[in-house]
Image (spheres, rainbow, N blue to C red):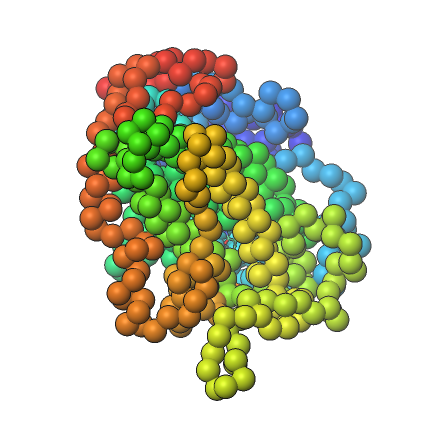
Length: 477
Ligand code: BYC
């Protein structure tokens, strides 16, 4: 199998599509529907061209090409990482057997479900971000938005390829459905909660690309371990692209905090919002929101689904090969976050012991939480370097949860159990209120002039692909 895609083909790919005419025809008939979806649900800001990265090769070196591309001419390709012919299943009851090149009949519906859920998030994020171009703080940021969008589009192609190539007619039907569901739609919403939330402003976008794309990193990391080799190889390559999305989130929040801190020092105030920045308290509220809805994306603290996925070899753990156990976990136990009886008939937030297999969503969530903490440390360093005593913080795992053990209760960001009345009274201090959102939106005035940047955010330290910040990243229409 070639590592490089041929861009003269209708659908650039490194999967030998021309060798399977039926599959090629099926995907070519899906392509106009995808393009129609992109035109009607993709970015709304008209442009002449954008400086974009296009994946061309799955090899270690030179995997992407950079250049100005009219958005309508962007080419979405299908890429699988190189095949390791000796690859063996690394966990579960089939451990040690050769990785599967086809879908085993007994796991067909579970695998399809995992691929559909993964696929559903990709176009959802494009839909959520479609209006942001109109308020971009700089051409650099605008370019990054479009880069994220086109790559999420490519990730949809990655999942649709698997559905078409390995799941026959029901796979093709699922691929159609991926274009019919829409983020926030009352009739046919996207499958997972966070993907039906709005991304109405750039602070939300940066928080989304920090916290929600990071869920993507961890979920893809577990699917990369899958016994189903084509899924594993697809995810491996997607993770490569995903790194830039999280870079956009990490450095985006860095720059918002930096600008706020600058003004707090300059004006000697705790509240920079009257000076055209986003107040630290509002940044904390956005962080609380995006982090908590992203925690929900890991499913329940305990789940028989995830136990079955693991035992079957469909979905592994983060860094499975580095784990020092039997990779089967049949007789292991783990402590998971839970509501527990406090001994006096009341409930409190604590932990309970469950089988390691049913606790696997918690295992992955914990890896994710530790990673999220590194971002918070980084943003706190920006505050510390500015000489400020304030700090940002991840809220408690029970805060604002709609899925799992804490879905039925309310908790403060410190993990204090609250009554519904207390929550109602106090939640405005912890989650963005309409007033906060309106203020943030009022700052979102577009800056589409080369080398200029909005007043609520600091410029980046570096441009893209060695270019300076004032490079012409986007030519507007
Ligand atoms: N919202 O057994 P449980 C990304 C449902 S992001 C609504 O605990 P399980 C990206 C669940 O379906 C990564 N419903 O769940 C980021 C189940 O329903 P049924 C996306 C939810 O199966 C940014 C019931 O609740 N990829 O790539 O252990 C931009 C019980 O749930 C939610 C994946 O997620 C929710 N949040 O785990 C672009 C990987 N959570 O069956 C892209 C594939 C759960 O009882 N998916 N439910 O009707 C999975 O691995 C798993 O399905 C989940 C859920 C981790 C999502």
